[in-house]
Length: 195
Ligand code: 5GP
Image 1 (cartoon, rainbow, N blue to C red):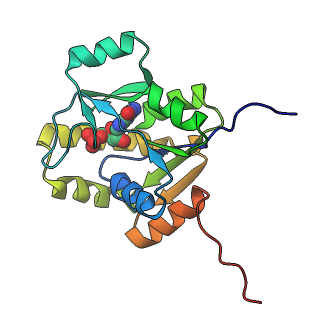
Image 2 (cartoon, helix red, strand yellow; image 1 turned 120 degrees about the vertical axis):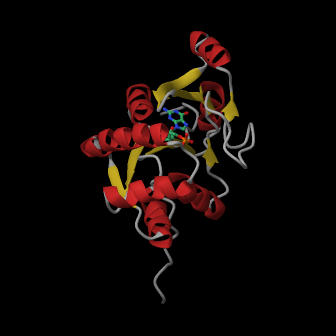
């Protein structure tokens, strides 16, 4: 008999910057408040409206590197000139409590999680086209030209890694994509057939 404690399911959501991962995940959490989304740490500066401890934990590079040295991250990566990482403790605690956990991270981090949690479900979110992705990144108006260039360069690498993922979702229309995400993550409530 298996007497090990219940483990929540770990789902990794990856996709290029500007693809709308954040919005999709926020909508999924509205529908499923039982899901727990990990709050990452980053060395990038907060964008307007971002709250420390809620959207990210904003750290200096020195503090971030200290946490790396302590083994405090489940995974971490450098992205467009900044460091991003998933604090290990809270993820392990939520999984141990049997709660489903979501990570919204870039490709290098997803690859690290694939090694430490091979059973995690890995989803790639794609834009309808590269031109549309570029339009979305530019219209966000938060990044300078150099940051946009780096993000687009990384986007090509992430999209080329499609075959590594368990599922791929094209984010063309938000509502359709949220429904699909719900099904893929295994949370869609199926209505029983009428008697
Ligand atoms: P942004 O600066 O646009 O918030 O995020 C840039 C990229 O970093 C996005 O692709 C986002 O998914 C990724 N990211 C956010 N948090 C983490 C993390 O903890 N680890 C890794 N590896 N990537 C992250």
